[in-house]
Image 1: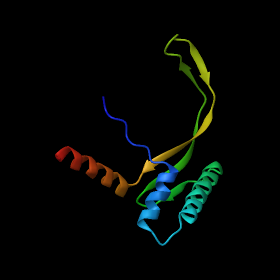
Image 2: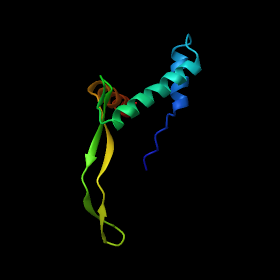
Image 3: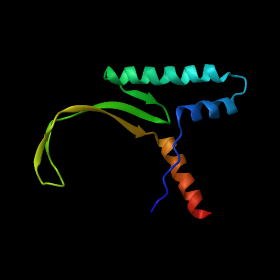
Length: 107
């Protein structure tokens, strides 16, 4: 069984940025991270696409109503239309992640 990946929390992000930028206060970094999340959230709610070059694209998408099947009972159930947020990884990030896996497997 594959080991579960470590989760990085908002607090971890703030700590990592603070370690890289000791000239900035943690409270200021936390405020910026929080505001970033608010701005991205509001954009997605308004139906806007958020593109961060070399990182990726967050995009709201609509899913049509459909019929699904309950795997336990086999019963057909309706699933309402909904909106979801998708993320498509950018080319540079994709390459960096792939390279890290190659490096792990070579070690």
